[in-house]
Image 1: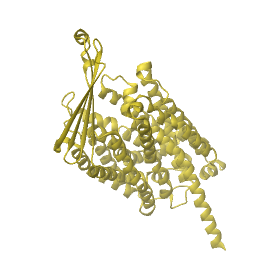
Image 2: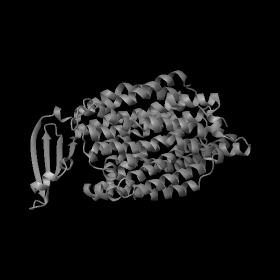
Image 3: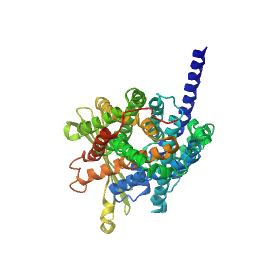
Image 4: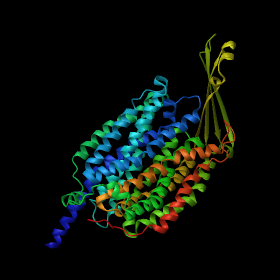
Length: 523
């Protein structure tokens, strides 16, 4: 009879945990979706909200705006982490969801640079900051909430479901963007269709808010509050007490900083590299990333479960070390496979189109060059240039207005596409190794009374600052090797030195100072 009672209790506990996971994951997934559609559409956003005179500067400005959302995340972690430790987990990350959804929806409504000038990037920058603040409070709350509902000895497994939401959010963002783009067509999507993924988020947020309203508070927090043991000042207790501050610094420098750069290199930088360094066509590059993410996502759960068996430290450190060693060889192969200099051309076709070629009017000349290579790779270069027919008008026109707009697209054959998916998938496996166990690791090293605050800050500095700056810093490193305007960079792999350096430092510190013990949470 006693055995039956225990079995029923265990079944109810698992069922309750699954409901908590489902409710928490839906909201967190939507927040990641909201956060990442901005980065996925970086090129289009740079054209919509920044001057087109200098495309490289516009892209860097967009990446800086994208990075601002990451840099502000630690402040959101402090603000909402404090609220979470004072008033509870549930209501705090309900507020973050509303702020995130509202900001994302608003970005889809902001008029472009042509309409309101510099107000456009200024408004988008402000909304991006609000997104970062909201995400700073979301993750810590969701991870804490799930961990405090999880059975002892299974926290790595159950919190790993929350870890999948970041990648699934990116996957959802890529999927929605591709569907809308294919439905509307490339030109329409570039003009206004890009706004649809932003606007759609308001409906997803409404569903998530409804689900979260029905959730109960964390049992550990409720118990602690009834006993009067909540912290009166979570910020002071987290960062002024020497022992706790030491754990915050170890968590940051020995785990989350390295995990952050591995995460963003394996997903965002990989996509940026495919599109900008390899010039792989938009749809194909996004499909490569999407398929790799789809195949690799279950490994978050695999490594989360494994961390319950052998500990969090060994898996995370192994992921960082392998990434450091493997990044340059992997990206060298990616670049060489897409590099046209290594291929033999067999067919070339040119198509010249002229619009408005009437007396006294400007002529829009579009030249499309398509090349086919022996390995099945195709290359398409589209050059658009506007020239006045009237010589006097042409002489009076500023020289920068005569610069042609060039778009290069490489489409890989199936064999190279599959190979590229495999190379990205390897990087996603690195991501799952460092990211799958990290939530359980963080919640277990901090006490319940200050857990939300203490774990949120190192997580969001590691991911938001060290990780979130990967696209911007890596792009700047590559640009620094460019010998001149219009010329290719001397080292297209130079951007990898930043994640390699940060992951190496984290590996050394984590190996020396992180304990491999698990399940050290207080009740």
